[in-house]
Image (cartoon, rainbow, N blue to C red):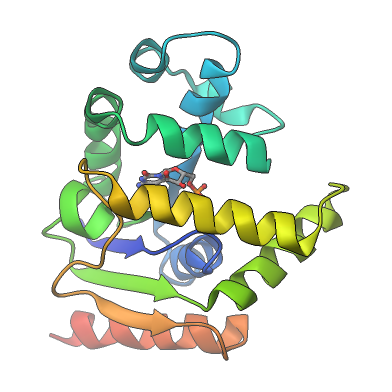
Length: 203
Ligand code: C5P
C-alpha cells in the first residue's frame, strides 16, 4: 500500500511536529525534507558548490549536529532557490513518498511539485509572532544564545525568499487543507490532521 501525506507551510509553523506525530499515529515513514536543503546549505558553508553538494549528499550529511541553526537555515533557503539543487533532490523524495506502508513528507513544495498526487495535502501555518515564539523556545532549549527579534527576522527573511523564488515557491497546493496552528495546542493540531487523513481513508 502506498499513501502519501504532503505537508507544506512556512518556517516553524509546526509542520515537523504534525508530520512526526501523524506518521507515528498511522505507522507511516516520515521525511523532513528541510533537512535535505539544510544539509546541502551546510556543505556550502564548507566551500562546496551548491549543486555539487546536493548531487553528492550522503546520509552522514543529514546527521551533522548543527543543521538546525539559523545560519544553516539561511544557507538552506539560499541553495533552495537554485533549480539544479532542487532537481538533484527530487528522486530521493519521490522514492520516499512512494515506499510501501505510507509516507509523510513535510517541506515547502511537497503538495505542489514533489507529490502533486498525494492522497492528503495539508498547508500548516501560524502567525509570525507564534512561530517566532515557538522557534525561540526550541533554540534556547538546546542552548542557542538568540533573541526573539533575531528569530523573527530569520523566519521572515526565509519565508520571503522561499515565497518569491521562481523554482517551486512556497505556496499551498490548490487542493490543500489549511491548518492554522496559531491558537491550537500540539494535540489539537494533530487531531485536526488525523481527522483529515481518516476522512480521506474512509473515501
Ligand atoms: O523546513 P526547514 O525550515 O528546515 O527548511 C529549511 C529551508 O529549506 C527552507 O527555508 C526552504 O528554503 C528550504 N526547503 C525547500 N523545500 C522543501 C523543504 C525546505 O525549499 N521542501
